[in-house]
Amino acid sequence: MIILAKETASRRGRFDAWYNGEKIVSSSRTPFLTAARVLMQRGFDPAAILDMRLGAAETPSLGGPIGKAAKLMVDEVTGAPRFRPYVVWPNATENE
Image (cartoon, rainbow, N blue to C red):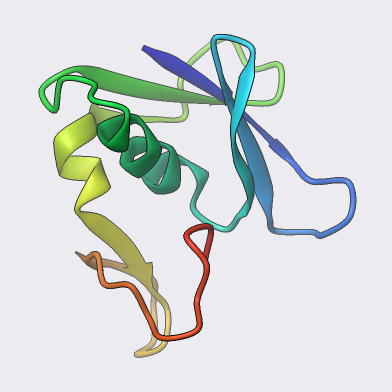
């Protein structure tokens, strides 16, 4: 499974992502992880491998099992970016 991610025109550092021509993520800082959560909600196999390509790249920039990616977020509050278990923050949108 491949998603295509492109930086949004309106906000630097935010990305939209498409799967099979359908936009499934809007303005996310972590389009791969957000797309994995969307696909899990749609019933995709958690063991399926998801690859993300940026822009017109021919090779994936990131990949892994949907189920594992859906359970992660990126924490930048405590210093260098690190993967952490996914938590929905109060007042946050799914695309954060």
